[in-house]
Image 1: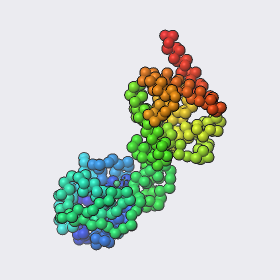
Image 2: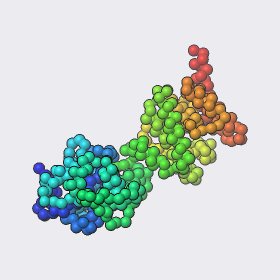
Image 3: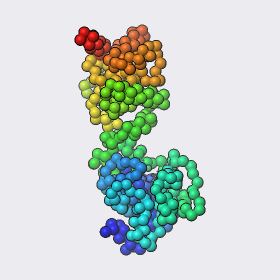
Image 4: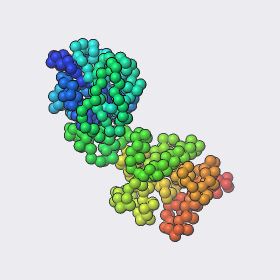
Length: 401
Ligand code: ATP
Ligand code: MG
């Protein structure tokens, strides 16, 4: 039983049909603008938005039902533009070639125009899509330039493809999701009803952010040199996690986000710290080099959606340490000190210790920090002293056993 929209197209004798495949996670203004433009430029009777259920190339962050509902809202008042479930309701991996075969059967008189962004067309014309030769036979293409897409020429021969006439629009669903997760305004990027839907259903609040996406976000938040340091800490943290039996995902998240607040000014950090409960101690508050740790834990929760208290605590104490540190806390503390980019007198000794004993390595890190703070007449955080005493006692007890 074909879906209602297909019946509608038959009834209206709509033959020139645009197709736009996508995850629409969520649908944004560029999607709708592209469909409108394609309709005009290619004299289309209608455009179907083919929402993917289970896309071959990437996984969606919002359930298909929500993505479809948002498309319905965005297209409700757009004449000739319709959401379609033809890809959504199919089980397993869905290939465009199968969709085209189905649609050709349902609408035998139709002429199809597939609407794509330049990034997608580049993928499909460079071996990224199954049975592309058959696809070229079943539909023509209208390709919209996209900021950041690789420059390319359209294939000639029997491939029917043309570029669309439209200024580049710097909008992506990824940008919408990140903005929602970061609490930044995004209302200009989507239809107002879609924004309302996102709010009401709490979509993209952060729990959906994977490590890769977090890493990409982070890249835009800190300086390149800081980002390199962070990647170094991730590398060391992974090594230590494997060696000392710490849950690798936790180690990775903690390492990735430990310095996420480093890009903030000191003034903004103090402001943000004002929201932390229990209140941040005055030594930490007074020092730009310390305040990024508790504020980082705050951002990790609010911006990156980290819910894991153990990860948040490791981030919170990664600069000062505290009494009663867990293996994860120690791991991050040590990884931050010995990552491959660090060079200071004594680092090799700590690296060697970290091959054997996390506690001893942490004590060496603390010794080095304490010596450094005292040599530079700095303010020593009591957490570091507490942490060190605690660990030294552990080492002594172990010896006595
Ligand atoms: P994501 O960031 O999650 O990949 P997206 O914005 O690329 O999302 P998709 O659902 O992946 O949206 O894209 C559907 C189609 O729309 C693709 O062909 C894509 O190339 C195209 N597209 C999306 N945004 C733009 C844009 N700003 N300019 C040109 N093409 C776009
Ligand atoms: Mg995309």
